Length: 297
Image (cartoon, helix red, strand yellow):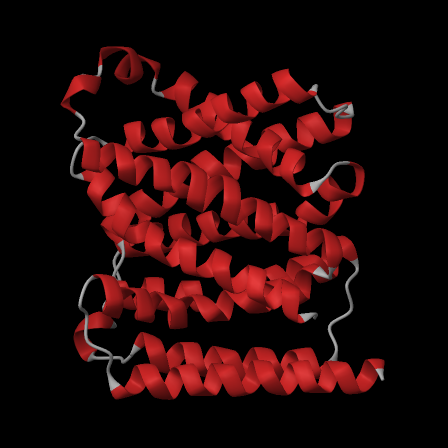
């Protein structure tokens, strides 16, 4: 994968890693339903205004219906399921589930897009997952081996959210075949905003918007324009240029940049495991990139 795509994906992953801080600020001022609505409602209004000025793209019925389904599932359903899944499961389960998101995306790209999984890709996935495992500081104790129906249900909800996210990534290859990344992602997020409006309409019309502080509005605008419009469009732009499986590898960078953001912004400590895990992931990705260049000559 070309350096320009790696750099673009690193910027996107860094912005997404910062989204947790912005989300925390937003949630301190309003319920989660309003955060979703104001985030993607703002995005929907932005794209409507942009298309009104530049002309509406010619989306085929297949793209419209596909975007409606994937957009709603990913930009509303995924966040809703993650929230409720986190309430019922445990941190160790979430760490393990997130660990498998890149693998899930690669497998879905294989079955849906027929993208072949090479031996080198299997190797870099294994190396990077090991590094992810180290950074996450996953360890098993007797007390966390006890399972309950609520915990299983929470894991299923969180896994469903990851499937929705992986679906958005994989079908991005289809959506960007007929439209550019900006318009394709815009249509998806538009339907996410509309879905949030329809489901939470009573809350939307009764909420006290004057109670939202400037700090919370700033966090919401960062979520809308930085994490959504820019980062997701960058993600789809990379997908439109290279194989989905290769773009999915950049997901392993998120715990690295997330740790750095936590250190620089929140003053969190970086443990030796963070450095070791980051080194393992970096070595794996650099090895894969070198092998990829060697194969292409």
